[in-house]
Image (cartoon, rainbow, N blue to C red; front, top):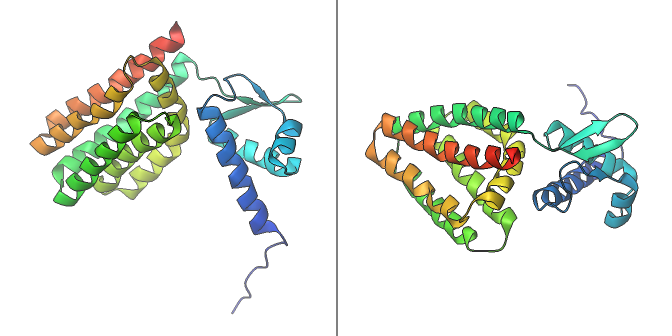
Length: 224
């Protein structure tokens, strides 16, 4: 029997630290403490967080792989500024994933799925009345993740999870440009109505409208 590999000393703690720094930077970017196009200072961040530069650099590389940062040779890491074309691409992929998911879900819509989604919309509506923008974004994403989960395709769910990092930036723009942010939450009731109807056509129309409105708000705001 082969012996188990021995992890280098401090490896687990270091990886956990990198994730903590990445989580901090993600929240700071979503809350626009760091603005699109802004350069991140490894030195300043390491001082502010009380860590060495190594986990800051690794966390930045992780966020680059997630589409939140970009690196420039000899200049460091910068907050990614999505242009209109990139935003269209993100929403186009999201629409492909969620169209398929809601069609699958409409064919197997169970009482458990209905109950879970209704409960999540209630949570989302509650979050919409708070001043916690991060919570609103996370609860919004959780609704759509639940929808895809109950559609019964784990690979589809993993694809959505990979897209959520960029979607956080997009939803941030929606909440800042939408005339009444609370309607973002209540708009999810239309998706529940479509699912409850049992009509795959109604579901497709509902998801097309839901994501289309979000896309139009974001793309138009970037184009202005």
